Length: 238
Image (tube, rainbow, N blue to C red):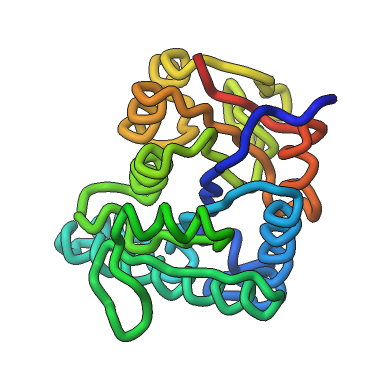
């Protein structure tokens, strides 16, 4: 199969993708493996930017559900994404990939503030840019942050690496008969509440005509296969 016509992509990873087989936290070996896949994609000619969630360290919604102030919990979750971004930056740079972390919450001692034009220049110079701290505001998920950055960076697609190999009509972990879609429309995802990403992220990608490619990042080498058009995935589009 020929490679899809994508050049610049945003790779959205859940925080869980960084913890490997651990119950929480960051597993350096897992982060190094994912960094190797990012490097391979870059070497293949793709321009890449990343957004990594923080659920392996702290999840704002979970904190709010246990009585924390929602805004405070969300800010704590944003700080967790910065930790994951720095871990990924270190893993990429150990493999020779020039990387920049830009945070929506200014934290000048450890990373750059988010500046759209500066991020675009980094990508043009062949650097990988990791966007941290979501949108910088509470009540928005890292999915929304990823969709926003994908639109701002004029990305050709948003690749979402998860623990399943695409979008199903029901949860494949609890329903063995669940059916996977090869392709599905934005409006169908929203109407059926399929939980690919939150509704705001889906709508933002729809309005900016950014396809969402959902695939299993836990399967080694899968990013390269999906980028080449040969891997198993679901494309959410028009």
